Length: 299
Length: 254
Image (tube, rainbow over all chains, first blue to last red; front, side, top):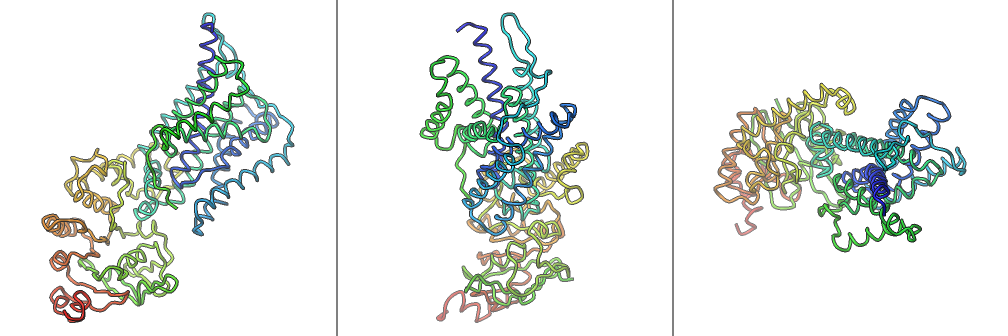
């Protein structure tokens, strides 16, 4: 493979991995805190793409303002799913399996509302030239996303890590994920903390969706399912409940997906298969994921 | 002033009455113990006081304020802290973080406010770190601040749990079997430690304990329960001479 193509592919893998990493953090946070595999997370991802179409394309807001609104609104939607569905079930002592099924229900609900409102026909995601312009370093031609996406993700990850380690709400999130009842007895407002973690997870998914949309511009109501599934796999491979693990898993999945296609073009229609195979292999070798630890599945 | 008062508190789980007509009064500055055989409903009593369970009947008052209907985090933030029978530290978090997360600065500002007003949040974080270090200093754990909580030896984990309970400046400290699993020397140290923090932090202490030597040494008064019912109350001397108590502990022949 020529050198310039290899560099391009590495960058592609990096960008894809970054997006998976952002989305998988949402899965891992909700699992870490309330042991919920949030099946609605991919719908939240999809929803934010439609929000972007509404605010940036239809209402013609400046892209940066539009995207800020999209991120905030998506975070609020994440909190709403928690408040309207999961929180109520939890309060009535529903077992986690019930809440997982509810998450599936929430996912279908969001998907179908979007279909009703926007129809199933593909829409164009509002791309931003500032992000998608191509530049050249010697023989290598790259889209600006190759630089900007990893930078954005890096900043967000550093910010998130700092937040978790150095602020009271961050500390509360870690405490709740360790022992919810003990945290409550130490005076931590557990419900608020859980809602906050949904806001963070959904907000990051929105950033992921916006970055994803710069590359894959066609938006349909099922647009979230594949990246959502891959990100979930990334979270599991990395060790679900663990944020570093989610990032490592995301990068791994993104990179492998791109590289398989780059080196074996004949297999390109099997690209998704590799992610799932990787999942099975990792789980067989290390069931808790790459840097996961054994956590009790608290009911 | 009565710090804690339970009036006719009854807790039923289906057909099982775990706590039956419990009437406890604890005055400011006292150390009061609740003893009784396993399954006597002692921990259930703590769970009712701290708001984990709402009592089936009866009321709980804290400095005259009714606790019924309050959530555990609300009970904690008005001044009741507790430790657990089986130590429940936040594993994998550092000793310092364990203590810090129980500070209640966020009573004033909401979660979002906390994040949006970054300078304020930073200041609060600094203050609570300082306060946590101070508490660790006073319980003799300062040099382990960066250790993982679970890497501390057992006795120190107990101490850390108490430190975590103290940082929210409680008026009442509930200790659920603090001497469980301790050897005689450790439990002697624990007794001194409880006296020490009681004076230093001006708190009232209510504890559940099986370790009779400890109970007799530190308690001002003792309540004895059996099958959810209170069978005796009095000073350590009164309790150790009470025939009902001797019978409950040693059986009929005793």
